[in-house]
Length: 345
Image 1 (cartoon, rainbow, N blue to C red):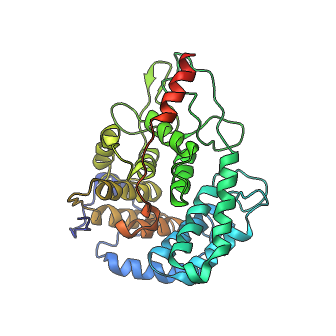
Image 2 (cartoon, helix red, strand yellow):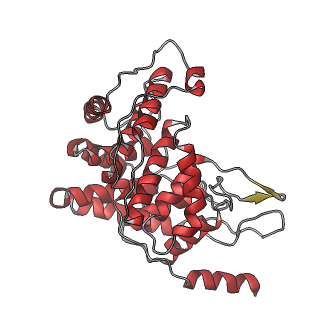
């Protein structure tokens, strides 16, 4: 069972240090906040990273997913159409909705289109299916660069995932997003998806969590960060026989949950911990109420940011979040065996 458990607010010294002229809304009722945010989302689903900034692919894609989660289908269609109109001839969708790139936001666009197709199969139909299939074709044409493996690096530099920018090494976050896109769009058995899963497992730090791309540099184990750790867990959830390699990372995220963190990181962390409950098929009772209300209050004190509000809104849908709407994936050992053979040859 996955649930939000009500509890009184728990202000911390860290929270207090962020105080400004905007007071905490200690009487914040999550249901009321969600209703306000849904109304805002419905009025303007195409947004940028911050109020007044140009419309960008990532905020629009997450707006589409939040709209789908709360059955605001007109807003979801508007957002998905914005992404589709910005899709380039090669299938890519650039961060700034132009032809310049970078193009890692193609993954998020594919997820949004696929989820809208699922919810609006008759009405939406073929145009969104065509869009995410073209997006997948682009993703399959793009890969991170292999680099020589040395004693200074701890990760397997021969595994291929996705880069932030063409012509560079594979990084954890774009690889996690691309794997999510492939799983959402029915390509989880593709060798690239299999290798992406291997890469994410390889990039986990032994003591738990993940850094942005490496595990060890110059003999020093890197510190984990919340967002890449959470993205790894979300991308790898519902993969058979994969609980043990992720155990330390899951425990790391559980420990971080009640510490103040950015809204974006919290949204991914909630998705990650909810996905663990879905994957393990067992009772899962975790407190998300206070972390959400704390993040909402912090954001309220800092800025009015629709993108971050949408991410918190999406994470508040818990197991109903369309980001987690994926079937199980089976991890093949074939790609791993092939990779080991290449390394030893």
